[in-house]
Length: 235
Image 1 (cartoon, rainbow, N blue to C red):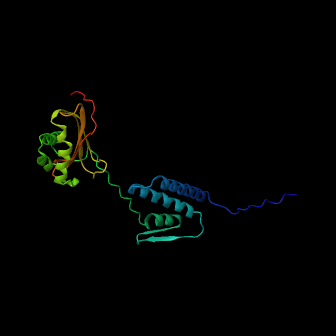
Image 2 (image 1 turned 30 degrees about the vertical axis):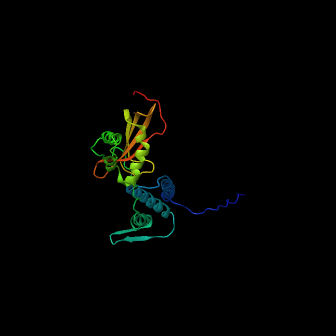
């Protein structure tokens, strides 16, 4: 006596080509999900690649679904079945525009610097201060710092004049930057000195910060002298 046939939850037949189309469609769906998770701001080329993969995936899934779909697009494209779904996904929905690229902060090399040497401008400024020509020195500072003449003159008379004449001054460094803490973006030069004043036993560090102006000239933005004395090197 023969055993009765085993019951199955799945009945019917499926074409091998249809099964392959479904499998590839499923793979394409997984691929597009991975791409979406990895690439946050796709380019125009990447967006169209995603659309093609998505259209192929939808067509593969549609190939196994029952029923028929007839697609007509703008009067010149007509397709049915899985091909119709492919055309619908690829052409019927406009591709989103790619995210605009963020403007890059200009680097020190890309900035258009003044033709004047900032080291020469800094030395010219400290020479004016050394000779007590405070008004002339005030004329070449960056007015954007908002320092009034009365405050400028008072600060030098109280802080600089008591140090006495300059015995010697040696430049210890010079560098350029497009960003400084607490300053607007732009072109800056920082020139450092070690200076021996007549009324000091040792030397002081001086820092002159210059800002590149729109007229391609340098203006002194800040001039600092260290309150502490340091050992003189090479003076």
